[in-house]
Length: 152
Image (tube, rainbow, N blue to C red; front, side, top):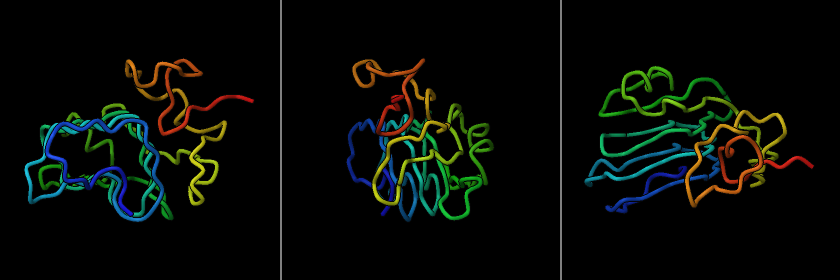
């Protein structure tokens, strides 16, 4: 399973507040078709492969959380054919993911599809507010991922 990318839509696409957990890459753009106008924000992405493959101008990524399953640690990115070993070097070189995170989002049980956040998740209060999308949030700002954390 690849994450929230790998679609073939040619028009603008807004990918907000998704959570994924599985094998493959988090976000991938096909090399064989023109691909622009994609906006990825506030997604929590746990995968075994790349954080981003084949990124290029015309697409926007920010406020996403990336985690590499099994080994943890830095997430690798490819932008315009250049490989970046971690999110920080990618952000500095491209201006993308300036507010991105490399952290385990601490899903309740991602392997079983329970993408609710645990109380100590680094994704709590880390998303950007998107008018009409995440207006009803519980904390200071929305949470990254598919579910808003709410204290019991």
